[in-house]
Length: 378
Ligand code: ARG
Image (tube, rainbow, N blue to C red; front, top):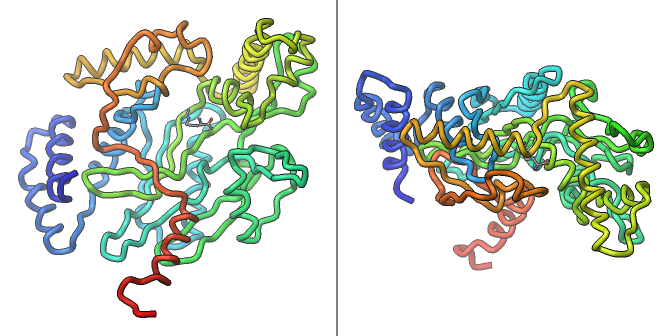
């Protein structure tokens, strides 16, 4: 909590200290306070934006990959004011970050929320690259069930999917005070990894795949009280995100029963541990396939070690690590990783990333509010 002024001052002081600046932050603080006084807001320098975004990653309690926070590449797209330029910026983000497989953690920052008009730039997608989900007439789902609601929104905007299990969704953007606009990503910039297994030949014939670049695009980046409502960011995948969740969860692709059957496991009794065996092979396939095709990925054991190294490095710099244990512990073989045996305070520091309501729900709420204006008599 606190006023914009307080948040700005705190952020500037921390940034000056962390960047080891010899000059005092006082001049910059005075200028920012005056700017806030005159305009109600202030504009970060590129240096402030860059360091703020890195700190936001460093403060992301649910992220196990934070050792690399200093390497974040920050693309400044705050000047973008039209849909065409926004799509272009998103495409160059994808190409730059994919880097032919040598994935680079990247964030693209669009203009922040305007507190006067309450208008904001948004990306409707949860991730820039993700598969559609379609509800069939028998109630089953083709594709990714996690995408059902967004896929429906895309249909309403006029997009037509192919009805397949791995259809790339279009990118939907919305600039302040404007209608949403959508565009499909050029196929050649989206890297996908066909899944195969080092021992099971049948695995490669299942037609399963996953995309290489996870770009979260619906979270808000908060730096020194300024809210960047469109600031898509990516790292590289940890194998279990795909192999133990996206393709394995019963309310996602639910592949464990199919794999167990192919492996001829006894699926009639839980105590045969068929789920666990299938899970290990699925995750083996994910790591094997990403490696085989030259896409950066990390296994959960290495990621856990890297997180412990992150904690040491933070302590050396006089900072305590905050963390959300429930998210940090990998979704398979939890206790075989060191993070399981540790605990962290789940305190939320600033700068940080925050969830925000789905853009289409916010739009609906806005319309409702208008028609039920408390000041109108009708
Ligand atoms: N868990 C999400 C997914 O499976 C991606 C979240 C971000 N992950 C990352 N490694 N940066 O698609």
